[in-house]
Image (cartoon, rainbow, N blue to C red; front, side, top):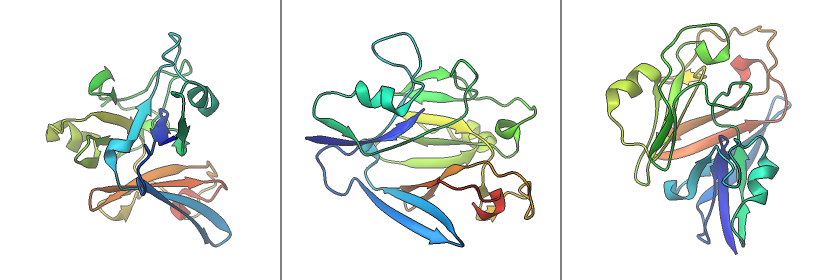
Length: 196
């Protein structure tokens, strides 16, 4: 059986019959549960936007799971980026080295435009998480990339736009990087963004 960890763009991570493509840990802090997935093998991580059997973008994890090849199992999936009402990416989207949506440097209202926003990009050798401005300058050769906002942490500091006593209780997920390994954090409760 082939195991895959899927990031759904849906950003999806898959583990293909290889042990330790990713590690899972559940962490409980101050009555908040964080699921953390450490991705050690970048070649096992993919983005999926379009249903290969139709012209529509995926709208659910179950839709992606139903279209996986025989003997392939999704190990984890999460939303990767922000999308318009018709499920088109708001910002940069690259899948299998093909860019289908350009880097969005516009300003505006809402989460996506809260600065700094940023880009998660990777190929089979390297991964980067950069602000939109830094990514534009970097010339990184992405096999996969997605743009989202706001960055929760930048250069080791919590985004100053997240207020300690904020009344925003949106459930957030995020990704971090250390030693070229990606760490995906999924929340199932609603802490303030400063607690995320």
